[in-house]
Length: 166
Image 1 (tube, one colour):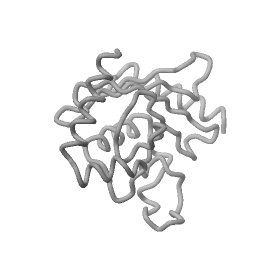
Image 2 (tube, rainbow, N blue to C red):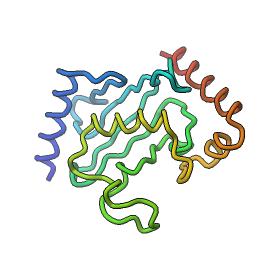
Image 3 (cartoon, rainbow, N blue to C red):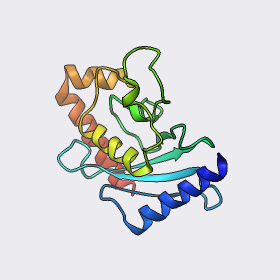
């Protein structure tokens, strides 16, 4: 699968280089490793993250596209669907098949039709609309639900700081 994975990832990188998508940029961390990408997400307009620049690493398994990559923000981010260590928790990054906890339908989970572009568009959408029913960061989800003004202030401070660190 590695040769197929390598070719597919090279093709996706070339496509994103030729036709950039608004809201993010992507490239390799190391030109000798197609399986590790550096991502920059620009905070989406009309969200609390607007004006921020959020770096992340996307790591692809050798079984890609049969198995999903993992994505971890390396810039501080406070969000119900991002673990405190930066790991992103969204359905399309969960392995294919049935959810052993019964929360997600198989159709919401990873499918080999997803690309780096569709993943990042989903992450940008997640920033706009947190899913607080299945939080990765319980503290952020609780604050988002119970004390939104405090949550808003914290997120906007983090977004400002991320822009200053650029």
